[in-house]
Structure formats: C-alpha cells, structure tokens
Length: 434
Image (cartoon, rainbow, N blue to C red; front, side, top):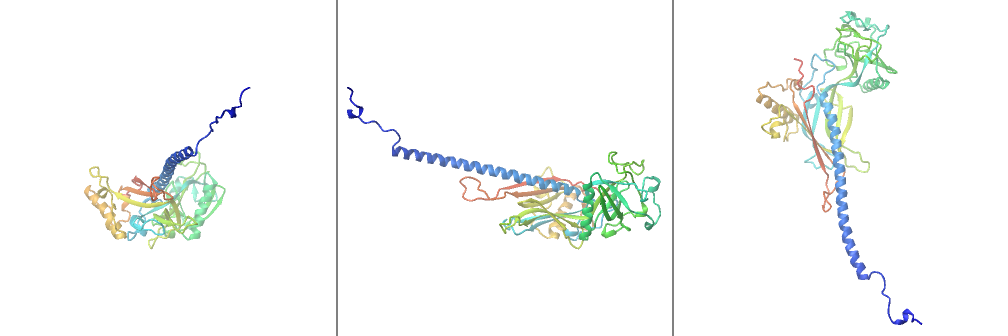
C-alpha cells in the first residue's frame, strides 16, 4: 500500500510572488507610469497649443477678411461721383483716412507697455449689399420708360408726383431697407440715399414703406445738401429714370443712351457719409470675471467734423492684443528694413499731430519725393489718399484664450501669441477725379 504524500516529509512549494518581488514590481511600474504621464501631459499640451494656434489663426483670418472688405470701401464716394465730399484734416474725427498710433487701452491683464493699439479711421458711403429695380406705375409719372423724358423737364418739384417704388428679388431685402431707414429716423442720423444707376442720380429717401418685396418711398424735396449730405446732388426736376416691371432675369439695363429694358433702372440704397474706426477695447465677456478681454472692435457712425460718435460697435475678434497699421508709397526691393519701407514703423508718438500729420504723412511725402512724385498728402487736401495708390499693412496679434505652460516641465504658464499680416492697396486709393 502506497504511503500518503504528506507523510513523506516533503513540502509543496507555495505559488505567487514574495513581498520583495511585489515591491520591486511596483517601483518599476510607478517609474513607467510617471514617464507615461509626462509623455501624456506633453502630448496634451501640444494638442491644446495646436488647437489654440489654429483657433487664433482662424480668428485672425476672419478679422483680416473684414478689414480687407472695409479698406476696399475706404474713400468710396457713391452719393456724388463727380466731386469730393467736404472733409477736414484737423483731427482723426474729421479726416477721410487716418491712423492714430499707440493709443493705450485699459481694463485687461495685458501689461501697460504692451496695451497699445492703433486707431484706423476712414470715410465712406456704405451701399447696402443688394439692389432693386425701379417699377413703372402710371400713377407715378416721375418714373418713365421714355428715352426723351430723361432730359431736364424744367418742371417744379412740387408739380411732380415723386412717389417711387423699387422691387427687390427677395422680401428680406425690402425689409432691410425699411430697418435701416427706421433706425436712421430713430437715431436722427443722415438716413438713406437712393442711387439710380441709369444716370447715377442720388436722392435722399423719406417715408419708406414695405409691401412684400417692394419698397415705396418719396425722395426728399430738396436733396441737394439735404440732412447734411455732401453738396452737389442733382435736383429732382433735373432727371428722370428708366422704370419697368421689376424683373431680374434680364440683368442690368443698358446705359441711358440705349434702349430701355423692361426690368427698370437698378437702384442702390446707400448710407451716406459714414465713418468707420478699428481699435482694441476691453470687453467684459466673462460674467465671472471683472477683468476685460482685449477685443478688436469696429465702430461706425455718421461723419461729424465736430467729433466722431459711434452709433454701432461690433466685436470683430476676441483676445486681440496688438493692432498696428502702416502705409508705404513703395516697397523698396533693395532695402528690407521696415523702418524705411513702412511709415509709422517704430513710432512712439501718440497724438494726432506727431503721430499722423507730422509722422506717417511726412514719411509718405518723403517716399513720394524719392520716387520723383509730387507730394499728394497735405493738410490742405483732405482727400489726398484718393490720389495716391498707397500700400497698407495691418499687423494683427491674437493670444490664446488661457495661459498654458510651454512644456511639461515648465514652472510657469503664459499666453501663446500669433501674428498675421495683411498687405493690400485699397480699391479707391489712387482713383482721382482728375
């Protein structure tokens, strides 16, 4: 008979790890996880930094697109295309185009030495981004399809039924005209001007009403110099316009010397004599914090030589810490020094006389002189920029939304900054009437 196993005096080896082995394994695992945590943290920082850089670049591009469109409208004179508006050059508020450098902004956590913004201001007549067609109506003889009736009638304004109807392709356009007109009346601003493109005849607008996609209005009895508009407008009794059925399929009608079409004269509605200004301001966008966020804002209001009063203010981009604008009459290919090429580069002046009149403009005149060109910028010529095809440079600096360390081992965190530059020659620069 076989002896039981336990009676042979031998022990079975225990299965598993000893305490020492477990401790050694835990130490190695802790070291491995610490390394992995460092790699994870670094990867996470890289991800966030990349995302914030992409977001910052996107905000810059959106702001640059708006700036590009606005600068192309600077000096756009639609109310009177045969004469310059009456402007002044005494200050930034009454200049047709100007840059006021190094203006401090407060209310943010940006250090005072860096919290400086340029203020870019310019004048324009702002066209609503759509047009209508002048309708023919037997009860409104001021509108006509007669080619011969386009000559001066000699009739008194009071003897003409000057009610006009303009049809748009969509009711939303008609409602927008009504909204702009209502806001203008409410705010006591210069209102709207209807520009008829068959003769480019501008008329001040009053009494706007809307029915579907049609706007009905009466031109001002005396559009010349009406409501502070630039002088030189054509009087009502000096012109009439092609009218039609308001169709849009036939496209634009021919000139007044051609055969009238059935669609009617194209009509633009224009907000005249507008001033636009770009600058950085502190905006309290976070209800949990009293510290403002630096934002690029766009202000707009009626031109007023006694002082700019914005009636609209729009935030273009958040977390914008730098906004610089420079001018150049030429990019010098033999000298890449920005201090030579760009008027205003490195300027520390902050008042209008030193920063603009005797600063940027004086540098532009020097550049023009070196090219053998006659100076076109002077205090006696408020529309100088319409005679000079200047290159405009805009540097826009944005920062990340929050502070972040640059690496996994960094002791402190900071904002990440991104600068983008726009170069352009505005469309209306160099378009002299001469």
